[in-house]
Image 1: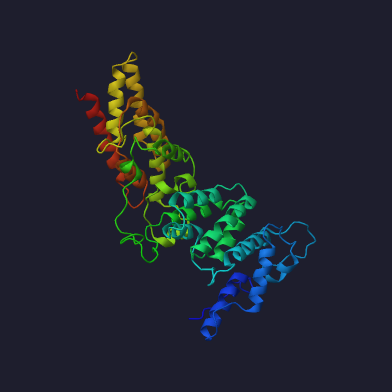
Image 2: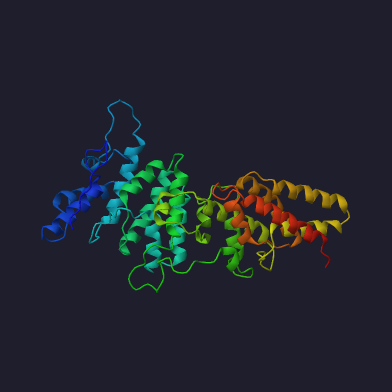
Length: 394
């Protein structure tokens, strides 16, 4: 079926990559050999001339630009023009020798990397290494260098990319919207609902069975345990979903359209905080610190009971009771997370476990307006757990 790209308001023509896709589909729809016209082929050659060149310095590319240059006499090119130049050259590398259009509307970079991983053209570690390298680029120039090495791999695996979306992401990279771009890549890459290629194992990529949280499956003696915990600790205090090193450990489920938008949900924020807390809590321990049934009240009570036997005795116990009281009176999930971060080193030193499934639920619902009584219930239960743990004799 022939489709056409309708440019949005403010743009008189589709982007060149959109024109190229329409050109190829038109040939198919008219019963001609599926190939690009001479106009598109000439444009693709021009794009490859622009690889590694500065925007505005390649005369052959002028005809394929759609972002206008303002006639204001300024020497500095608009950010959108520079981003379009980068997107065009990446498209040229990606489309080169590909048998079908590589511009695929709706296919973000994270999803493309997920499909690349499932194609088995590269190992999972190799794909993640390339995606994380791109996501941690300090500026647009460095990002494009990483993408120049990635898009030929996508072409070899038969995976396309939404270049209109990528253009917008390149435009946003050096601005305040980078975090949303990063979150969308990470969420797309961990999307269990993304369709797997033909021949994939049953249930893979269809949503299937929900994966257990990382803290449930963590193996303290594993060869990569230390590196994994370090990656999770790097997310402390960072915006959820924007820390590329943490992406392989996220299990949050949400609708694919929310992932594509880089939505910051309560579920994602709660999982992010729980992962960073678990990593700080778990380090140096040979047994898993996720302990089912051990609420923050129970854990704090056990700390207080241990403190009572130390040299400081009552003073240490009273200090813990005050700290736990501040935790219970947290006004929102952010304040709750702040107090939990202060407990994590204490729990680590004392070897006291914590139920991270319960913790994630509390962080997710503590100030949820749809669950106005959730915080009150947690406060009551954790307060009872605290006093029970303090007074229970071994």
